[in-house]
Image (cartoon, rainbow, N blue to C red; front, side, top):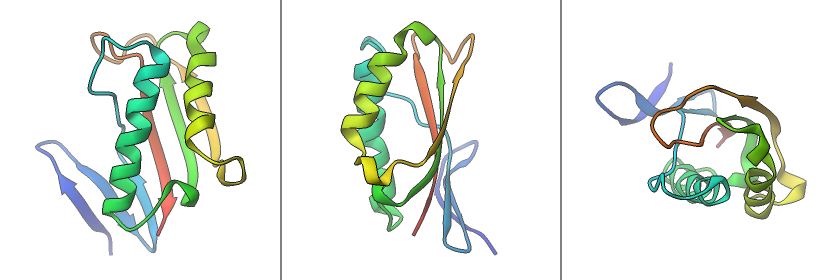
Length: 114
């Protein structure tokens, strides 16, 4: 059976099944920031979400990053690698997408364990 956390009108932010935590996509709060700044905001939000469900960034299993401009990948990577310790890096896919919404440059989806 799954445990669902943090319901919104259209989804739950996190679904837990057999000790694995599946997180919905997370975007920044301030869309006026460049790619690095938006990524830093998302990482801070992920820290809070992970803590709320009894996990941490050191327990990440996988991450999928959707970005609207692949030429900005260096800024995203800089924020990402300064957030998570090298020994805890999860598997990761980075996908270039046409649109995530007005001024949204990046969205991150993660899977972690408890």
